[in-house]
Amino acid sequence: MPINILMPALSPTMEKGNLAKWLKKEGDKVKSGDVIAEIETDKATMEVEAVDEGTIAKILVAEGTQDVAVNAVIAVLAADGEDVKAASSGAGADKPKPAPAAEAPAPKPAAAAPAPAAASAAKAPAPAAAPAPQPAAAQSNGARVFSSPLARRLAKDAGIELGRINGSGPHGRVVAADVEKAKSGGGLKAPAAAAGAPAGATGAIGAPAMSDQQILGLYEQGAYESVPHDSMRRTIAQRLTAATNSMPTFYLTVDCDLGKLSAAREEINAAAGKNAEGKPLYKLSVNDFVIKAMAIALQKIPEANVSWTEAAMLRHKHSDIGVAVALPFGLITPIIRQAEIKSISAISNEMKELAARAKAKKLKPNEYQGGASSVSNLGMFGIKDFTAVINPPQSSILAVGTGEERAVVRNGQIVAATIMSVTLSCDHRAIDGALGAELITAFKKLIENPVMMVV
Image 1: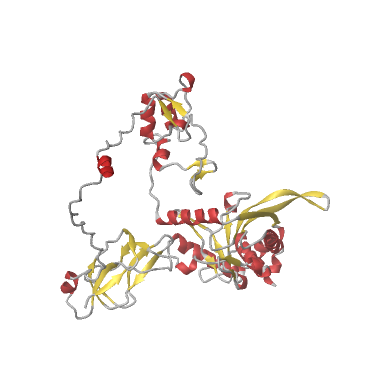
Image 2: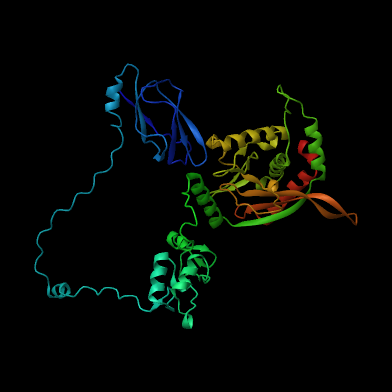
């Protein structure tokens, strides 16, 4: 009997994915455990293994197909000893069939003669058609906008509201030249918030959301390239929009002196042994120390090592630290599990390996899901300080700036020191202000005294 190969669910939340590549073709024999295809989700590309033995009789979903639903039949396998052609001819027979279209309702019997009131209503004339636009168009807020017929037509074609255009004609009348100027983004008034607009209906504070057509109307034709969103970019947008809309967040910033850390890092890297290829066994970065310090700080302040749920607060036993990795197509945060018990050199090597597989989209779901906190480091770009958006279900994230020489006061003297600014974003539902201050203070003590990370 033919065996259907189904689109697998690679994570508990996966509903669909892209069939990136077939590694077997029709007629190929496969054994249990053979890799037959690559499935691409919003975060990673994963291999699909055969569960049964047999011959690929029919491929139903071509490689490169996007948004294939979980449990959809993607291929048919002929079991050992089964006729491949027969299995191929019946391919997809077990696929779920769409529900039949609703039948047209049976004709109703002729209605009885209408009552007098109904008869008069039936004879009532149809509503008059909408009147043609008048020289003074109305804004959504009821104010009149004086404009020329040509200007109204051009604004309508461009998807620009007349009320947003500054008129240069007599008495502020909007003319065609004003509309042409508005298409390039000039001569537009700051939009007012729509009265009674529902929550989340604004694209900026006090500004009503604009349709895609209105946005395109602000730019000249041929002055841009439309790049469709991929699944990763859509997921990032959905998750971070949800985080900023539903998560009350506050920020705490401290400056850390890197003097002792820099000296320790140089000494440790100089003492690193060589592998068989003659390369150092490890090369520690400042970010490796940051990950370790954050992990230990969460153990010292366990009340901050939590995740918020509507039912309960989840207090984590270990410090699972996500680390933001920039990709050409988005952002992902692979997680260093139990970072508090790992050496800094082990964290360094694991982070390099995770980052390499993240860039190749080879991470498994359990390698980037969960955790209680994350680290986002933009110091390598020369960024002094910034605030980062928390990635649910985590309750905090540490934004790390560059280490730079600054003038500081020590014992009444102005001296140069290497200072790094860090900002902790906290979910106020899970972490209160004082608790967040305890956490970032514990982190600062560890970074400024790295020997405390090994005791």
